[in-house]
Image 1: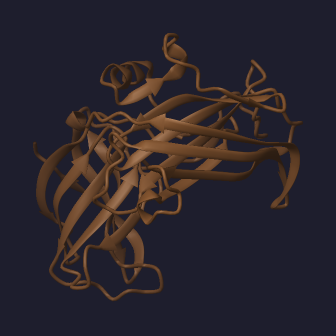
Image 2 (image 1 turned 120 degrees about the vertical axis):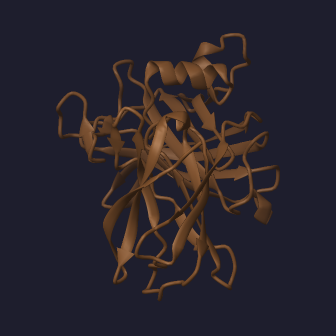
Length: 295
């Protein structure tokens, strides 16, 4: 779900932004076994806005062209799943062996066109991306609960159970902040939006806009520009950096807006010189431009 080089993984782990459980042999095992299937946390990466988690699954596999999954996956923070403060935005899926290329298209490293969910050791991996519901909330130092129920396969959107059981986890997240706030103060030409500043970490971004004139909304399109990628100091362009996030106005006056998005790969914020921004034209996001930032 988020690519990182070996060096980036090392840096994130050393800074306690990422935790790789297999590399901490002295830590207590969090593995849960039910009906012959063992699930255990593998990697957790967290900042204020996003947490990426992977879980290793052993003792269950599927045939080619079958899509494995769970009947239910529940993720919440705190101790009371019914409390509104516990809610998170969450997406999760079994890893199918694909990675995004430079254009954001999912491809398979071995050249295959068939998803393959089982690795060379016979294990599968479930990946979760969760983000805060309230734009000013933070995951740092929080406890995240992850609950899996019933394992099986999906066929035409219908779940077919294979292994009944519950696998529940309590994960304590790092309290180390990796974000930096960068003043931008640049107008998005042709719009009523100015990027005032960005709050950026190696895995996500929050963009803060001031708004002189809010555009007419069209269905679900608010007309707010979107940062879609970045340009690095060495000239490298990463135009498809952002995973789907969310846009919104901070209040009913529409004088300020924001964008929150996670990254598809780890990025060193100190290397970024420009933001690649997608702006609306007649309620369709069709134009892109580069907005320089200075630190």
